[in-house]
Figure 1: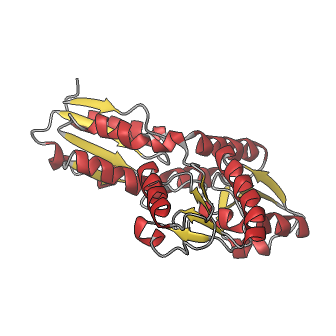
Figure 2 (figure 1 turned 30 degrees about the horizontal axis):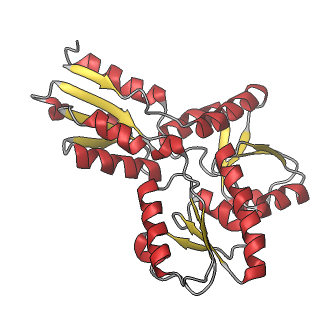
Length: 289
């Protein structure tokens, strides 16, 4: 058996930044609160929990006082910062710089559109942590669309500024742009802002190439990861013999009968140490070159 590792799999820089901040804080303190899962990967969350990280929701956050809380890479709406100030909560802000830039751009666009009776439209997943933060920049007035079909229902008689959640599909974003161009009234203002993170946007093409010539592919991801679900489907479409796993306990050794070239890859929320752990597991059960 030959094992091939997709070297581009693993945490994006935003997640690395957040985890490094959490680890630094936990070296000096036994406990640190994190508002929401620091990353959508249960194995990594367990590792950090063992170091003292405590994941909380927004309701718990509202009742905390005089403590320290980490804001993860997804970012937060303005209301979160107001609560922290009122409750004397020290924030360790690990918001991804790409997300922070997008929040600022949307806030500026919102202030402009208020004067024009226009619409802020965000291509994103409703309820996703990043989207909640983006929505907050518009006083929760933006329209969230998650598909081309959703875009069909926009009001094409009013100005539109279109933005994208950083982890959404670049191809779908531009398909939505074309649809709006076709439907909006000629005299009505339309601007779009390509805010998709390139580290994420090009992963589908890279991972498609990686999967193409393998006999079997193990795709490692947390089950809650939107990026993981999307990239797994890309792998599955390219190579039908792709298996989705979150832990080594989910591996079936019978999968590898007659399969010599094994590929291992993952999402931008998948830790490198977990990819190595899967590789080491296979090496203990098979004769690996």
